[in-house]
Structures are given as structure tokens and as C-alpha cells.
Amino acid sequence: MFKIIVVFMSITLLLGAKESKTNKEKKDVKKLEKVETPTFTLAKESITTKEYNATLNYKKVSSINEINSLTLDIKPKGEWHINTGFPIKFKLNANCLKSDKVKYKKKDAKTVTEKNILLNMNTKCNKKINDEITLTGAFGVCKADMCKRKTLKVKVKVEVK
Image 1 (tube, rainbow, N blue to C red):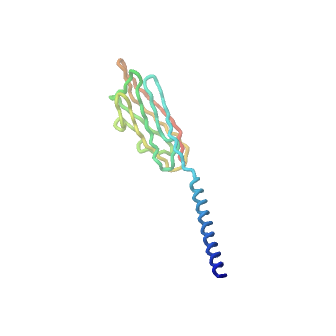
Image 2 (tube, helix red, strand yellow):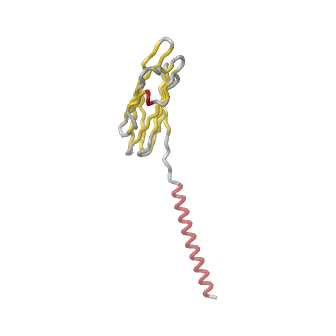
Image 3 (tube, one colour):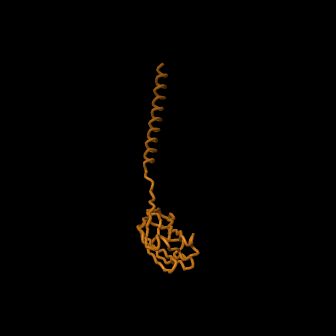
């Protein structure tokens, strides 16, 4: 009878030890679940004139070596339209952020119509940094009696974590 009680107690202790290890593992899992994942904030910079609206969409925060896609969308206002025959030129400048291209022309745009210009650009950085991206460019807008060459310059701050 004594042997049965000892064996029973030994099994209980072993199971208890196993259970406490399982509880520890559960606590470790809970700790892992509490780790914050990085958040990526989409940002938008807009320029409005009497002839057009221009919007630059980009990621304000990105990770090292992550591609940050920038999208420039220019839409004429009122009686104005994009002059599709006018040369379209844009240049992207940044310190750390390296882009797939630096200079963009009409052929690089996703869309060039009388209703809008849509240009996609990609950048990435290989280190942690707070940087500034500057996009400069020129395009043409027209209305019934006149055409204008327009230039724009947009500066945005980005963070690479």
C-alpha cells in the first residue's frame, strides 16, 4: 500500500511539474503577443493652385530596405486640362533614400491624359534615418485661350526604422 501512495504522489508531482512548465510556456506566449508590430503611416502632401491640384502619397514611416512607393497625382481644375504635348519632367532627391530612378519623363508616367498625370516612384533606404524627399517637376496646363508651363516642388519628411 505504501508503494502505491508513493507512486501516486510521484505521478502527481511529475504532472504538477509538467503543468507548471506549460503555464510558463503560456506566459512566454503572452509576452510574445504583446510585442508591438511597426505601424506604417500613409501620408499625403497636397498642392492646390487655380490651375491644378497635385497630391503626393507616400509612407511616412518605413523599415530598412523596404520599398516606399510614392504616387504623384496631378489633376487640372475647372476649364484647365493637362497639355499632353508638353514635356513632363520630374526629379526625386533624397539623402539616404535611393530610388529606382531619379529623373522621370512623360514615358515613365503611368497615366498622362488631359484629365491627369499619374506617376509612381519607388525609394528605399539601407539604414535608420530621418530623411527628406524633394520632388521637383514641370508640366503644362491649358485652357481655351492659353497654355502655361507649371513647376512644382514638394518636400516631405520620412522616417526609416
